[in-house]
Length: 126
Image 1 (cartoon, rainbow, N blue to C red):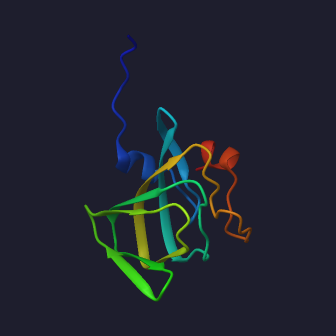
Image 2 (cartoon, rainbow, N blue to C red):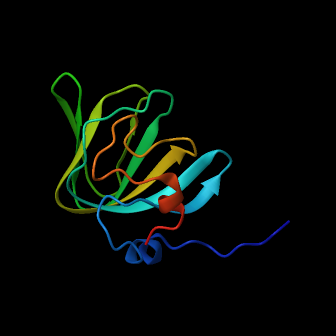
Image 3 (tube, rainbow, N blue to C red):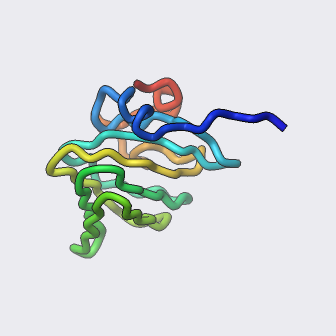
């Protein structure tokens, strides 16, 4: 059995230099653990086959959902966006998050925008 050092979320977030650029910091079976900094809004999108978990480290994140619904998350809270649900994350101030997503999850689903980040870039993102 291999012994690993613990991962410090704050240290990993300190290495993130661009908003909306998730950075893979770990893997649990078929799930990536990612950190990201958010500011502004992403883009309306859905993940047809995967759920997506947002855990707030700092700041307040609003996740707009289809049907004029919205979820507001604060530090220490998390929300799982169910597969197939249209959503749009919005950060009125800088927000630091941990994401847990299946390794096959495309950043913005089938929507491609200037904010879309490939998984290859997420694995090496800073």
